[in-house]
Length: 271
DNA sequence: ATGGTCGGCAACCGA
Image (cartoon, chains in turn purple, orange):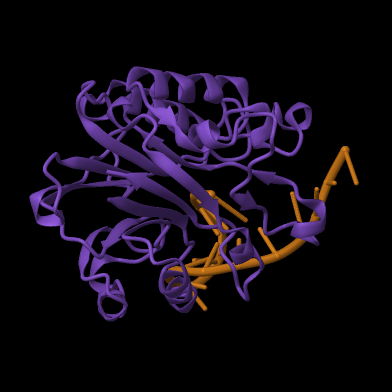
């Protein structure tokens, strides 16, 4: 059966709840993973999602910053949150889809919001970049992010790294810009290798085709300049190799009224 | 070479 999973950095779920509703009615994913909800759990618009058919929710939010959530049409067995770098930042939540979702073999879904890392690409003088690099090191070491060869798992989110040459508008001009520096791309690659994760977006659309999921708010005309980056990712464990039949990057949502700077990315997974 | 824009939340921080 096909399972549609969307990841979207929404940059305030409360401000953009109508845009989210529009997307859900149009795209009908089974599971929606949000990042940067910027919403404490007791203020999360759960009822709105329930009315839209997303009755199952796992949320990990805080006031003002960060925050992740999973909204689902199908029930899950449980959810978990991990903290990283000894901080209370809400940057991860995972759910397990199993028998209650009609699956004989369980499937773990991780939703991440990796630190952006600030502006200065030097960990010695920029503690935010140090934090980003440490966060990636901890992801690499984390046992639950190293699925066994038989384990079905999907990792999505705003990973805030555009790892390949054609994940950015200009590789040369981005080499010293946080999100595309060699040191973070190397650590990103090690996270992926440690868990035998498959980059499903690049399986279906190999380099050198450009792929972007984010366009800066600061561009005068984001569409004309098209200086995008691929910051959002959908990885599958080796047990799901070849099972992603489609990836849709909903670029139109960048042109919405009061858009997020990220657009929804949806994978169709045959499970 | 520089500054450009958002959102939260009430002065700036984070992105």
